[in-house]
Amino acid sequence: MNAWRHFKTITRHRHEVIKNCARAGILWQGLFHDLSKYSPSEFLPGIRFYQGDKSPNEMERRQNGYSLAWMHHKGRNRHHFEYWTDYNPQIGRYGPVKMPIKYVKEMFCDRVAASKIYQGKNYTDSHPIEYFNRGRANRLIHPETSDFIEKLLVMLSEQGEEKTFEYIRQVKEY
Image 1: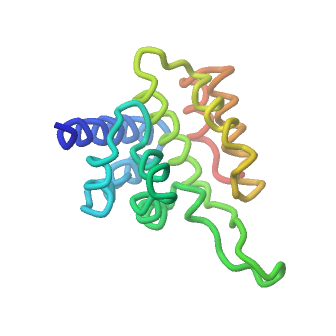
Image 2 (image 1 turned 120 degrees about the vertical axis):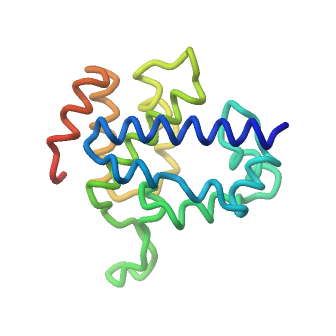
Image 3 (image 1 turned 135 degrees about the vertical axis):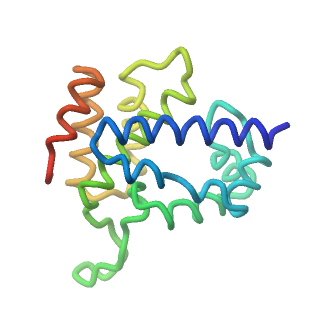
């Protein structure tokens, strides 16, 4: 039963991202969004830890202290800021790297879609920024990337989807 529910959830999410990416002018990225979720490395833990109202990675992390599915996912999907870390010789350790604009746009589309899927009929345009703000203290993200995604999420909350997607289509750099 969880296999079917998980499949439906990730597919509904993916279709919502595709729709958002089309509105953002990056349809091609949307068509390839999150295909790794259908791989055994991500799909099988997704079934095992399925909850329906949040990512199964959270439950896997709670149980094991880490999520192998998440580590697989973030290492293959460039729209996650966690993908964008590398060794920085100037500071002598790993640190965040500024994300290319096309992946920040996809990250926005993903966050809106995830909020809609998990919030259901309770979704409002302020949910994505609220979720973003809850994780602020623990986030390792390049400051310019963080500022830009926050700007988009605040714009969504204050001005709505139509204006925000219109703006995103026009943005070439941040």
